[in-house]
Length: 191
Image (cartoon, rainbow, N blue to C red; front, side, top):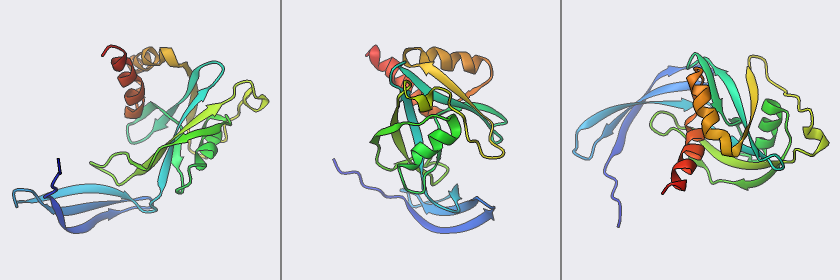
């Protein structure tokens, strides 16, 4: 079955431009021929980000981070991530900086859109195996940038849902991609 797209952009104007982001207003023509105004955000230096799904292979734990984010005025549980400069290997740099752990890339997703209703972000999901018996991973030390506030959380994979829900009860926000991974996995067990 062919999907016929009938919506199109007519014009666009920049509403605001900051150091890292810009806000745009796009005039679109809807499928009914009526004009629609859509607001969106763009990164000024476009690059493909990396989202790191890292697991400690011997202890069967996943590495999560709890990070303060001013946009939500609180902490969020998420996966290590960063702008990847279009290089999947940058995932290992982000993992080391944010968690102190080193690992090996085992799979790389295609470029994915992360929030297309609002922002033009793209990212790859990079799966990384971390050998928790490796001496480099015995006492990991973060290499945080100034202004970063990141706590490392090691969570047993089979206890991840309970951990997420407990953290949420304590006022910690949960990144959607964590729910995609653990919520859907939990649901699929019952299908």
